[in-house]
Image (cartoon, rainbow, N blue to C red; front, side, top):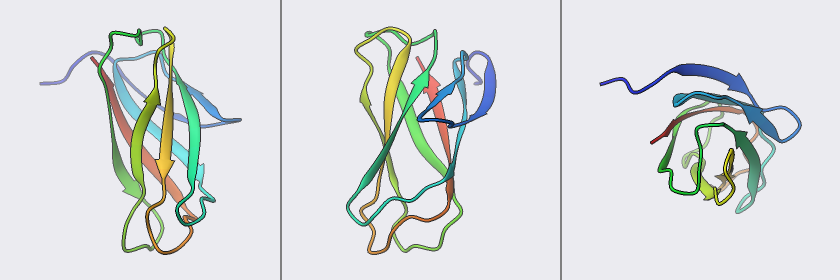
Length: 104
């Protein structure tokens, strides 16, 4: 079952604006050190503090044994959520990622 509208966007200057219920976020080239994290804001008028936000790694273009872990860090403010790309691998992240999301 497909839920709501769909769009795709690219992170620029630490944020991406996608005012849809589900979509794909392209990070551009990540430069995340071992055990480091990169964060960006998903600006979305569907998000409120009672939302359930699901994120998952769709694709990582790099060559690493353990891909990045994607998680929602904060969505306590209506209209945005902070997304983190965490590197638990044994090498720095040095490629782009695509992240699927849904706001319920």
